Image 1 (cartoon, rainbow, N blue to C red):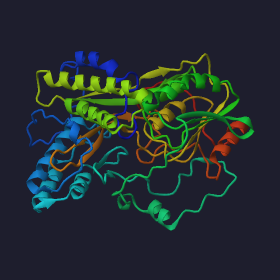
Image 2: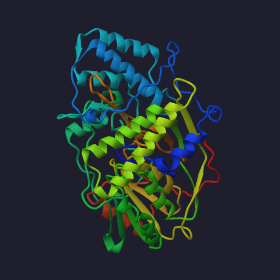
Image 3: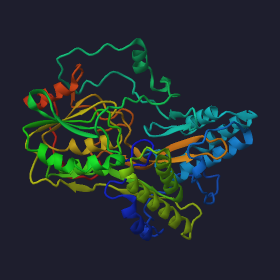
Image 4: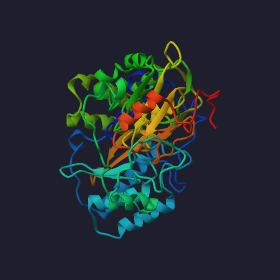
Length: 466
């Protein structure tokens, strides 16, 4: 996945590699078995619209709008969700007709709407327990409001083993109040906390007693030059008697880098994540918007620009081909892959003990990596719960043309093959590390072996969905 402001990439091939064959097979006959997106029964299918953000508006500030303009923006937001949002399994991608009618009534009740007020109304209308879903705006004072709280309520799970020589750091009263508040009462009107880890995208060092520690700080395609070395590093590490993979603060990126690293550690067959992808003009345009904004902002290194430009061109070709296809006025289709198997590429089984160190900063493609490595015998996850932002990825960006309010939503849904992941809660660690030196504790854990209470996992006999 391209992290945060750019679209998450597909597991097996980039859009450029799959666009042509994908377009060729997209016919209603071949997609007859795909579930249709939920739609308000009182509404006829809307004609195709363009949700492409003009280049001059990619980071333009918002403005106050009239009630009539806000209503038109609400309709565009509804269209974007119906046509592009993958949504969580078992939930409709768009609100009920009754909920939309209530929002329309609220908009008519005021003569003018400030952008932050409109973004708040849209968040409350379309919000779901989805770690990627967000509303806000750009400009000089950008705003990003998550659609769900980033912290789950309740105490830490008791099922995880603990291995720490230090006491848990004392939390501030404010932090305790947030952690113990009910889910609906958590503050949501704020940008998510970011604690970027400084250093190279990939860095191999020696930890306590010489235990190798591989820090993978991102899977962003902008770091392709560094991430391309991960399979070779995995081949080196897997022969060590013990090693640590430090994933703290890794907010995700292109999942293919994560998958290649996992497959280079073992020869075992692994259950791939189940996935459901939205194929529509809106989804392709929204993903392209995300890439175009990154390029326009200049946050893509020069060496990585050709990769981004190629991906953008493929997305725009896909949107154009889907728009030109004859047939329904609302041609969204959901393509589902379940029970797939990916086989490890190593020459044999993992020889040593691997500890994957995580915290609340591990999200998206980072969590998808854990969904694979938790199946490898000899691998253990230690640290804290991950963020819980994996279920809906490949983020598309939309800007409502009148107010300038932005929507960020996922166009591809994923499911952990072992069924242990929960959105917003994340993965629970096998061993909880609460000390002041988690990296050192992880190295000690890898060196001495697992606590008796730690789970023993291995490859499953079948990857059929439970």
